[in-house]
Image (cartoon, rainbow, N blue to C red):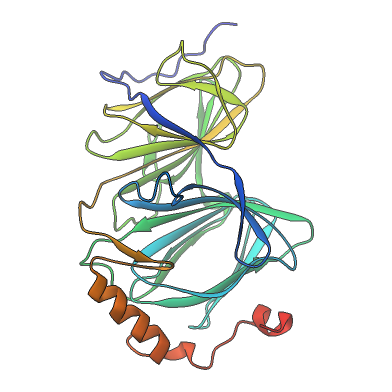
Length: 301
């Protein structure tokens, strides 16, 4: 099968330096996630804290819970999830939709299924620098039809954040980040630049492909690939089926990290303060005192 060339020249393609299979585990209330970043073998990949591929069927889900000090990026692959927070923000994201939530100084929210059957998606946690950890919470939400999408030489990309094939995303990333959803037809070959100082990884969603080296063994779905140094990613689909994966890269913060569950700060003192703020409903958590999501009330939480 002849390879379809995608025009871009990399001087030093990044190689796969570590590979993990994300195995299913329980999370939230009856939900199943495949966690690849944030597990014991890979606690942190600066600036990325967690990557979950989630699978949820009602009444399971992620009822009321807090966050501080980072951003959550939810990208729906199948079905729909309803989000609700203590500021009164409520909405539903469906297949292909994106929600980029900056928790900042504090948010309490719920994420629950909004449709019958299985809801699937990805949730990425991105750390915030010390200067941004206590900013006001904010949302960036883009429906599937508004996500920039471009195809060339057998490669289709949805540009969630950053730039690919000459197309840019409107998402503003406080921690400089690229997030690209690639689909390669059989025979396609991709070369995608990545800023040389950034950390980057691939997570395979469907099919199988070669990454970094055309002679490497093909890698299949649910694998996380950490990429080494270099100026970009090279990938090949030599199979007979479509290969789909996300490529995510970010500028390392290089700051101390202390995490306690859903709270991510720079020092233990800041974590202690955050726990106190949450327990006493102060300093950003005032509205948590009396708030319960509609989902929590209906489920009797």
